[in-house]
Structures are given as C-alpha cells and as structure tokens.
Length: 42
Image 1 (tube, helix red, strand yellow):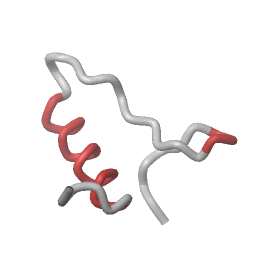
Image 2 (cartoon, rainbow, N blue to C red; image 1 turned 90 degrees about the horizontal axis):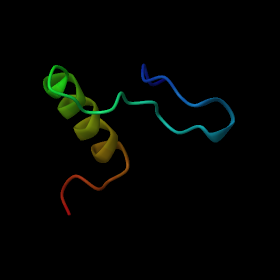
Image 3 (tube, rainbow, N blue to C red; image 1 turned 90 degrees about the vertical axis):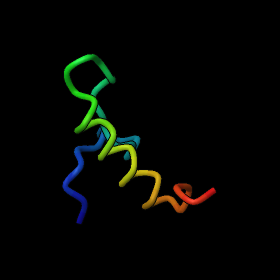
Image 4 (tube, helix red, strand yellow; image 1 turned 120 degrees about the horizontal axis):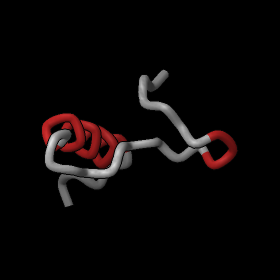
C-alpha cells in the first residue's frame, strides 16, 4: 500500500504545491508517482 495520501473519492495522490521550501520532497514524490504510472522513462 502506498504511503501517499489520496484525495478521498477521487483516489488521486495529494502532493503539496511546489514552493521555494519543499522542492526536494516535491521532486521525490513526483518521481515516485510518475514511475508508478509508467511515465518516468517517456
């Protein structure tokens, strides 16, 4: 099971909006999400 929070009924992952203080965490979450969906190597 994924440790990413989801948006209730929609099942979409909740990732904080990118800002000047959260780049490293945002980058990691986006990479994991894209890899999970098979989109990282496009």
